[in-house]
Image: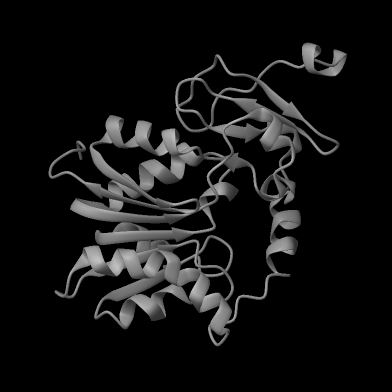
Length: 228
């Protein structure tokens, strides 16, 4: 461990708020901490971008609903989620829909109604005052500086027996593999979830969790599992 690592105090976990986190990895850009309670790995708070710098990077994204490759990518979540939602029309929210909302098109083909929310590109606060049968978030949760806040919000918005459909790359098991992992190199990626992170959240908050693949997680809330 470097001298710099020994001198810097650890940051508390931004998901479960545990203060006893430990150094996990340091690269040329930033430090990363590991939470032994929820298994989140997260970037040092000192390395977080300003809102303007973060937005400038997001504006470079080319998310085109007409791009067949992009639709196929999102279908990794849409297809298994539609299988679980059933045929009755439901109401959903795409949280972090980005500059080119696309997932809602795939879900609306299944007969459901989906609203698009994004703190930068579609910041309609009224959408956060409603209740939903399902909430989706694709390639967004890894950007959350304080994921405890968004997770609590989702719990408040989601109906009993509702579904959470998430896409994010699950972090490697070992620090040595994390060191070589390209996903961490995006400066807007700051929160890295392990499969056990979602299992921990599911146990704490009353969900059934399915790890569909290396970047797809679907959770269903058990009825009356979260105090309103």
